[in-house]
Amino acid sequence: MARELAPSSNDGMRSLRREEFSSLQTLLDTVFRPGLAAEYPHIYAAEHAPFLRVVVRDGEVVSHMAALRRYASLFGCTVRVASLGGVATYEKHRGKGYATALFEDSMRACREDGVDFMHVSGYRNMYHRFGCRYVGRHWKFTVTAAQAELFDDAAVSLTETTRKDTTAMAAAYRREPVRWLRPPSDFVNTLEGFVMNRPTRVLTLREGKAFRGYVVIAQPPQEQGATTAMLEYAGDRKAIAGALGQLVRQYDLETLDLHVADHDRLLLDLMRERGVEGTPAATSGTVTLIHFERLMERMRPHFSELVGEDAATGLVFQQLEDHFRFSYGGDSVVADDPGQAVQLIFGTPGREEESLLQNGGRAAEILREILPIPTLWYGVNYV
Image 1: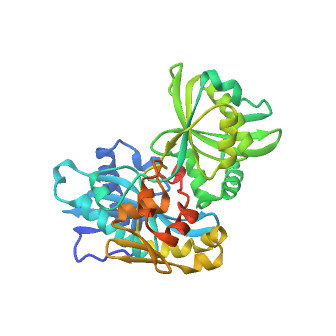
Image 2: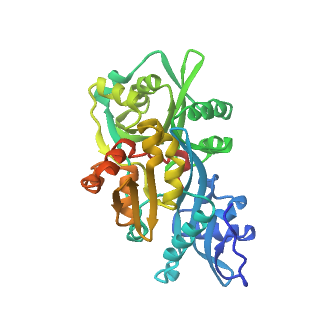
Image 3: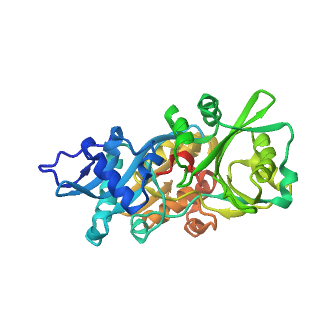
């Protein structure tokens, strides 16, 4: 758990206290919209107070930032990740540097809590200064009404998900090679709250009585010919592809968007076999590093799978102030700031990181084999 500061008075920058939760709700209601805290029960609950950093003035919460922690699995390697969001300050208290101070303090608390990197639900100049970048190699696909018949498998049925389905949902998600390690409550909350800042429909996929997976889509608008997006999915890829046409028809959509990660080769092939080409895209939100060396060490077993024990063991990772060095033997690749480092580690849709690998010798050759590591998709873990 994050270290909760023990301030000498009621005011200051610190973790939220349980008795201040109603004051935080008022801030969120005012800055965002009424009821926002109830839309995100996986973070906005009194028991999560240590994850909620606040500035308090005269007993009132006037600025806030949330940083939910979860473990995640990236091709079998366990890493620690934070989701940061909910940045809010009353208008009369803006311009005092509270958000910047909270961001810096949240990064410190996350580092002390063993976090390796952080997802941030948005982009601001302030985030950029802290190394946040759009990263990941995903593909955005759009299925149109005219293409619906190409994605309509009659053997796959779609039904509204209920609480009794959440155990099967969690089991399907646990089989994903790149995933957050979620408690069961996250799947229950999916049915009750928002996902990625939107109300949703959660649907199970079955063939006969067999559970094949689930999809979470943004609540489609009521008007005919609308567009919506798939916010999360897990399970049998053929069933997921075979349900896309039904979704388009069931909700009378003009288009349905979905992101597919570059490592999800089966779903990519299924989309392209049907003549739908994707466009390069980043993962959801922006990403920054919290602890470079620890992240690389945690990923070393995966690196061994790709290049063998000798090459993986010979890699050395060092952070020297704001410089990030990847070395092998006498060769090195150096990222000159946190933004460059996060782009190199996670990749970018436009492959901007390639320039760093031009003169790195054997170190660069190995990095081309082991990087980028896959990025997480927010889905239910959005804050």
